[in-house]
Amino acid sequence: MYGAGAQSGGALEDSTSKGASKMLQGSGNQGQTSLTGKNPFAILKASAIASPATAVFPNNFANLPKVSPPFLDPLDEEDKDKYTLVLDLDETLIHNVEYQNDSFFLVRPGCVQFIETMAKYYEIVIFTAALQEYADQVIDQIDVGKNIKYRLYRQHTSQNGPFLVKDLSLLGRDINKTIIIDNISDNFILQPDNGIFISTWYDDMRDRFLEEITPLLREIVDKKVADVRKALRQYRDQVLRQVANGVKNPSIVFT
Image (cartoon, rainbow, N blue to C red; front, top):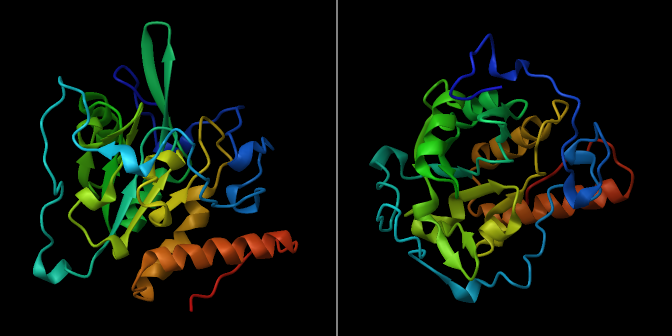
């Protein structure tokens, strides 16, 4: 539990709770992991309201700092083949709780270790629709090893009707080597094949999504996959097929 007035008494993963996270497709089974859920790692169809044809940048928030693409600095020559992992913040890595006149946030199990591990393979970017002041306070506390390379906020989102979306084409990175993990599929409607839809997390300390997705993300880099979109399609297809056939621990083979 973390917040402006919260004291850290140990590792970030020590919190406990009786709540349950919202699983993929709303299965609601407490203790069930996303990997064995009804529709594991599915890319949900975006809502009929959100249309990629109507997405524009910049958004219409006049009081936000002005930014212009590309949002990320060019990669150094030695990092030109680096993969980029874009992570959402709220309900993906943490859950903010408002209580009376105070607020604090809970950290998804494995979050700190996940960031540390993924930084060995990817350039890590946090992309949130939250305001910068709030997001920075949270990121400063979960990024204990200073492994997050870039932070993108509400001012970096694109307007899509009433929604804000995250346009990966504005990052300045090879889209073939860019992955986004988000609990709202509409957020990556412009590049759906680059996205991994994560179950919304509130306070279920038995959740193991980040631990379960780590082998896939490692393998993509280790095998120098030319196009992550193809790899993610293969992954979803193979996992869904195996789960449908009753396989408890699905495995994948990239072709």
